[in-house]
Amino acid sequence: MDERKTVLLSTAYLPPVHYFAIVAGVKEVLIEKFETYPKQTYRNRCEIYSANGRIPLIVPVHRPDGNHTMTKDVLLSMHENWQILHWRAIKTAYANSPFFLYYQDELEPFFNEKANKLLDFNTQLMKVILDLIGIKVKISYTSDFILDRPEVLDYRWKITPKKIFDEFDLVEYYQSFSEKHGFIPNLSIIDLLFNLGPETAEYLLKDNGRVLE
Image 1: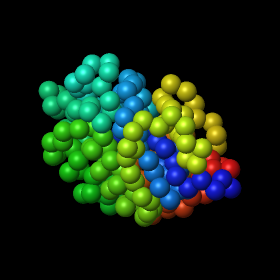
Image 2: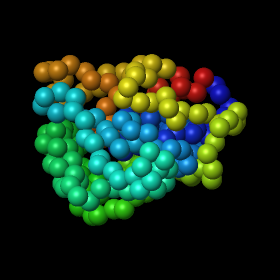
Image 3: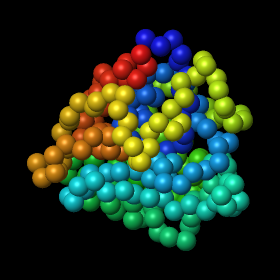
Image 4: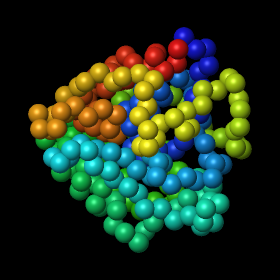
């Protein structure tokens, strides 16, 4: 088992299951805030399981400094009703899942109340989800851009929609539309939470040792 207990991650919107499996296996999470913000990543998107299969939910953002904007400065766009649309999509996809009603009151406020910065929004949402799962971990931000710290596990660019994260396989679990489309791995953590409920932590902890070996 790797003795390093701090992991360096990018911010992420309702991150995928692999992301939370990594978080579940460490004592501290460092979230990178001084990187130049990249497009088409989980920083502002997640994927859920709908009646039509895997669908993305993308948060519209504004980069004040264009291509040179740091993640800490990325703003949430208020020109679109994306929060209402995202919650509507989530509710449509998971209303019949075993534990949606159990958790919806904790998550719905994030889609009703206006927020300013993507980083703050993602982090607060992540903290609530960790609390619902029952996993305790310290979450901090980087104080500058980290190039190389051997004592830290760096996963900033390993979990991305553009490639398969294959450091370990996720065990299949019940999904509402699996009879129609089969098991879809590594969706947003809410897919796992709404389907497994109190067993979510056990599921994540079962596999995170493979990441940290």
